[in-house]
Image (tube, rainbow, N blue to C red):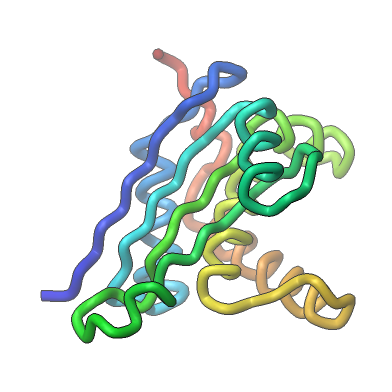
Length: 161
């Protein structure tokens, strides 16, 4: 049986988020769209303060960012049964809200884009060079469109606590 571990946590209070739906969207992305049979992934929704701290502490950038992905698969390469996709993704909900206004989209759509972006990084996509960034953005946008066809992303707005 393939390892398929997915943890989704909410450590921010800016917006309520439907975590079971975010979990279903992420599982669909991993299993059906990216054909990942083995994964160990954690997704954590965080505040602007927390993502800024993480960015400074681990990446030596003293700025706020939208998403940070930590790839743990390299540290497990010697373990033959470890999943090929193993990591954590930290998403700043406040940045999703801010960027959604800028790009005239919804924050649930932007949040989903950040989740996709983090997963793509864990799969080896890079965005430090313009050509790589353009390629990654294309895959990200096409993947978001596929997920939008399957899910009503507006339902990521949790109605109850």
